[in-house]
Image 1 (cartoon, each protein chain N blue to C red):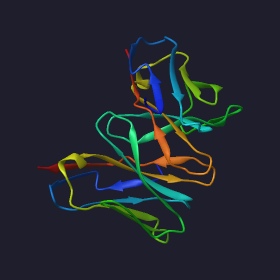
Image 2: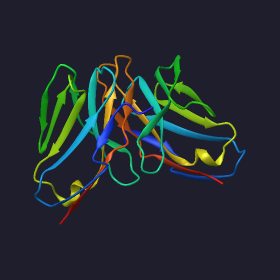
Image 3: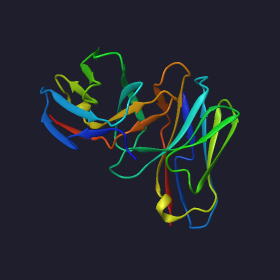
Length: 112
Length: 110
């Protein structure tokens, strides 16, 4: 089984809809991250969490919110989706002592 | 804003040749990581080099770090068609966050 899982893997939705992307991990890591990737570009940090009670905004948090339900679960919500949020979304985890990040398989989101 | 910038943006070589990718960054770092991404998939960690290290090896990978020039290079020796992918550098800060560059797309022709 994969250490970091994301659901759904693909999602097509309409402008104005609320969308939730979920991430679960079995690595036992405290740190979790949400990134988005646009075609031909690198990853940009949306939100990150260093433990269950810690939530921090990243580079591009506007239009997004997150919830850290447990050490193993970190959800990303788009309150009112817009077309320029069409992208590939990745969840990642890392250990407190080592900065290596472990990525999920990604969620391809299309907002029409 | 991107911290790391990879160069070149795209690289095409023949199988068996070496591939070198470079990463430049702007501010002080705690570490620098290299990742690989196959088309549309999640990133896979390749190697991490700390700011007090100058060179690391892992199999066919060699990474160098020059903090005075704020640059790093990734060398893949004896490349294979299976090495075809995008390669990203990420700079890690003291707060535990990493900032990714836009990547180098490597194509290895059989």
